[in-house]
Image 1 (cartoon, one colour):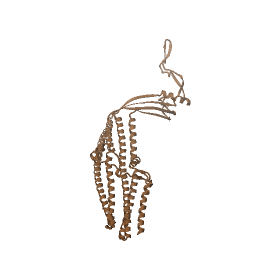
Image 2: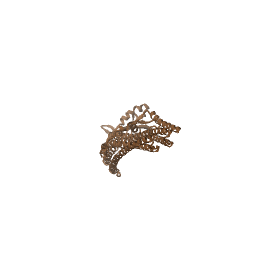
Image 3: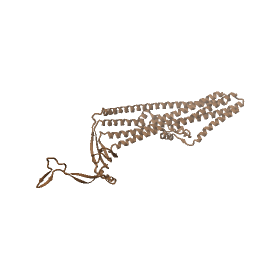
Image 4: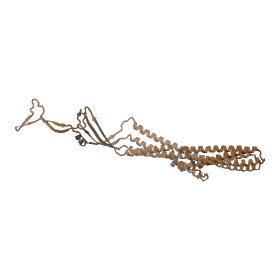
Length: 493
């Protein structure tokens, strides 16, 4: 019997040491603020939303740049074979030659019924909505982190309660053993206490396992390596600020939430963007006036150098036609003289020396206006306009549904908080009465007026009452913090 008691003591000492060593090995503690900040900066969903926000910002920049003139340059070089038109002479040529085209063109819309301006507005609104979406996801994650964090704290408190329970049972075991050794109590009483100690040890192991599991759950939400030691900072639960219900009336909280919750902000922005998109679609039914121009030149190595001319005469004589007239005894030819140009191909040095000169000689410019009037395009413009109006209706319904859901959530959270407070008050009263019952039972047991089984029953009742009170207390705190969250105050402990 003595060996059995010693074994139970050793078991409890080992379990308690395990918990203490685990806590001491983790020197770096995480409070709720650090957990929330880490989660919002490392969560995959937040990172994805942030990328979408950056893409929207790039689109806004592109929309603004579309208001400015567009300018582009081009150049092409190649070799032509067979029969083709020489770009420098516009004459047909059958020889191989090298050519190059150089151009610069630009244009700008002068009138488009505000399409570009509204496109900039829509892009800017979409960028703001994307940022609000990042905040919404971060808020949801913060709420989840707070819930998991409080679960860890509650699990740690349950471990402490089981430790106190074991300590009480060990005290009872010592008292009972002495009385059994003295012959004042039968050995059955000692066996019942030993069974209770084994049950308490099992409860301790279960509570500690639950604590470890809640730690792993929180680490998973934070995207932390579960192999790395992790411990949360434990605030004094009595010092956690809890607002009064007078400051958390659902009607007031709902009005504040409409202006602070990121989802409501995003929906309002999306609705405004949808209305601007209607103006863009309407612009598709109106004319567009564009101004444009270009500069161009070309070069060809087939351009030949003229070295002189040879006189060929006055053409072929026509029968019956005198090609001469006499004026004052002087003969004059009435046919035009014919000459042959003497040309030679340029050598390599002359080709490249003449490159800039050819580009200068062949340089051309133009500028003009272009008016595009939509007359019939298969109903595409009208269909786009109708679709944009329907998108506005859809955005309005989406905003309305989100606001209704928000209101329902706030009123539900308020009811849950009031119910949680009532459960906490009831469990507090239960702990007080269970503690009194246990104290009376222990005194009666000490004087031999109560059996060990009845004492164990009172002790278990006290344990259940304490665990339930603890669970109700953390549940009440979390539900009150949810109401604060809807007010836009974030989650703090």
